[in-house]
Structure formats: C-alpha cells, structure tokens
Length: 140
Image (tube, rainbow, N blue to C red; front, side, top):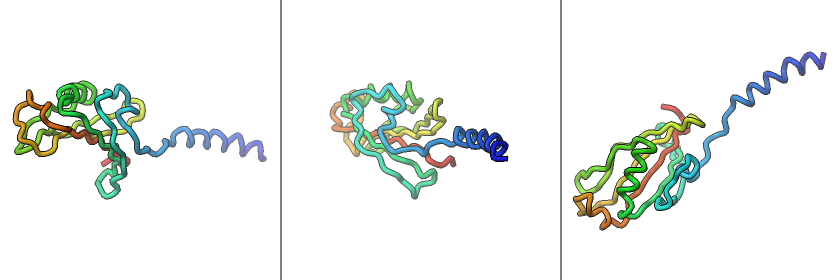
C-alpha cells in the first residue's frame, strides 16, 4: 500500500516542484539579464507594493557624457524609445522587456533631472541621467 502511494504521489510532487518558480528577488536587474555596460551604476533596489503590479524597482545612474551610449544600448537590448526633450527634462516613454529565459517582465525608464540643456549634443553638460527598471511581481 505504501509503495503504491509513493509511486502515485512521487511524480505529482515532482511535477509541482518543477513548475513552481522562485519569487523574484530585488537586485541589479541589468547585471542579471546580462550585457550591463560598466558606465551604468547600480544604486539600489526596493519593493513598491502599493503600485499596480507590485514591482521591485532598481535604480541606476550614468553620467551625461554616457547618455547617448546608454540610449543606444537600451534601444538595442530592450527596444526603449529614444529620449526627447519635454519641458525641462530629457525622458522617453517606458520600454518593456520580457526575459526569454525567466519570462519575467521589466519596464524601463530613463530620464534626466530638470535641466536647461536643450540639445542632445550638450548631454555631457548634464551631471546624471537616471534609469529605473521595474520587475513586475504580478501580471496586470
């Protein structure tokens, strides 16, 4: 009897264990995904449980002189739209990336703080641009 139960229950437990995914963990998402440029500095990661998809939010910064390279990298890797000037900041609509290995969804946003710089060629005059990556822990 015990042998019959173990034969029936064993495969069911193995199937359940293999289909369960570990909960996402806060961290340097760009490093986890791969190909993170050295000029993008990881600052912190924290949970945002009050937002709709309860994301884990990683924050990065990069020098203004590296913003054009970062913009190209984010376009190539994550199809993030180019930055544009609006009012007194440089920013872009968020990009979205689904990791083909983990199937986790990431939203990416890059922008500057308020600045008088109004030409792309002068981005080097901006101290820092900031990159935010949200890892959705709940699908919308």
